[in-house]
Length: 190
Image 1 (cartoon, rainbow, N blue to C red):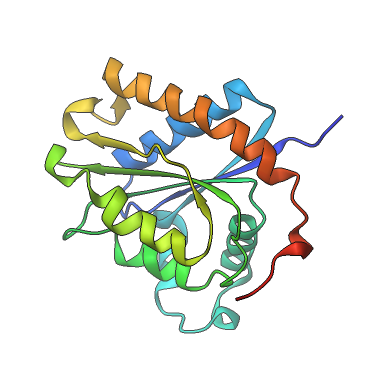
Image 2 (tube, one colour; image 1 turned 45 degrees about the horizontal axis):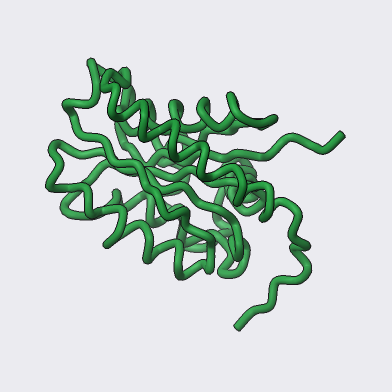
């Protein structure tokens, strides 16, 4: 029997409750419905205060270091942020500033974002995808964007969004299976 996939969802939201976190939970649940997976959710609302003042990884408390290791060891990352001033939140970027430069090579990453309207959907292509390209991660071709109208409060309410979530999970799993079989020692730094 193979080990379950390690799925780590990272919410860049600075609020609780959060539509972004609700979207990430729905994406992680869709993956877990389709494959044996252990899902771990990292919320900036929880670790943000300990993260905000650190300048070096060794300055971080053990609890945040554990979350960084979870990100680096994931078989699938699901990452999302609300659109904030035309990009992801600053603490979201600060968190990923502490990730090892080559720790995510070949790791599948499902990108997600939320915003007030459809005009913000390009955050996935213009902000999130380049960040994870730097890490040489395998960003999945289908990202999931949701606007305020896709939710009833903080619950996914839109049938179209539920369909996008299901499609993203279906398309992610073959790549997760492939990437989970890779030898992490084979990563070459360029």
